[in-house]
Amino acid sequence: MTNKDGMNYAPQGKPQPVVGRGDYIFAAMSLDHGHIYGMCNGLREAGATLKWVYDADADKVKRFLETYPEAQAAESEEQILQDAEVSLVAAAAIPSLRGPLGVKVMEHGKDYFTDKTPFTSLDQLEQARLTTASTGRKYAVYYSERLHTESGVYAGELIKEGAIGRVVQVLGLGPHRLNASSRPSWFFEKEKYGGILCDIGSHQIEQFLHYTGAKDAHINSARIANYNNHQYPELEDYGDASLTGDNGAAGYFRVDWLTPDGLSTWGDGRTVIMGTTGYIELRKYVDIARGGGGDQLYLVNAGGEKHMNLQGKVGYPYFGELILDCLNRTELAMTQEHTFKAAELCLIAQRDAIRIHNSER
Image: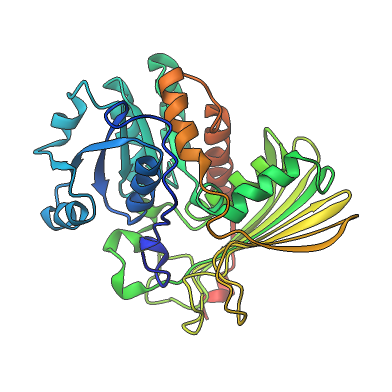
């Protein structure tokens, strides 16, 4: 795993199997984004068995098989979709293709696990909603900035325990390193990647809903810009948004592709969660200039000030919960409505965003 490039950031945790080998079988396809490795790591650590992989690009399949030699290279998507043993398909397609692929997978009677952002249009979201309703299948999304960080997981547990009272505001910062030379061409085509608020903004909105307990939210304002990458006219390297939850909670987030070269990791992702009786700060990937690595949590409440280094101490329960949800048809890992609401709100923020035109000077 590299910490220099967010596209290939694939956390590895301790095995926490919830099923025995062969009891839950999945396949991987559409290897367009490196997050597929984090997705597969999480599923395998939770006990799932990886049977197939497919991508039209043979080099991507070769690299995948070097990491997961137990998988078999399928000859086509159909070979996977027609295999009755496969319960779930994990995929990291080009963003504009993720929704249609999910519909196809669910129509073949399988659950679907996609990288974020799960859709690039509200029409795709509506089609997925209709398909989950008609098939009873799951459309799960890898919102990794909460699900695959131990500080993000533990923050949710502290909030549930009442450590900071009622959550009234969430501040999210999601900077990423561009690494333009290593990006595929679709990354710079807005029709294919969806826009910055639709893409990496989806992490931030999902976290806001989860930590505040809001079921819905109103987008108060949103902005997008291209400040420093004018050679890629369709790229947005900055975005922010303000939102208010249906329970009154306030939210603001900023995302960007402006991480400086001197940072030791791909992005200084942070979240500050303010409650009525305390607050939490998460330094997810780096604690700058201190050498402690990521997954640092700071808690301040009536009990005082606390700092917790959570690396290797919490794990990633989402993946096991997802497997059990698929087997038992429950919704413990994440409800379908929450999954779709986070996607819907990021699409609305992207649609309604004001473009900062003087950023192009």
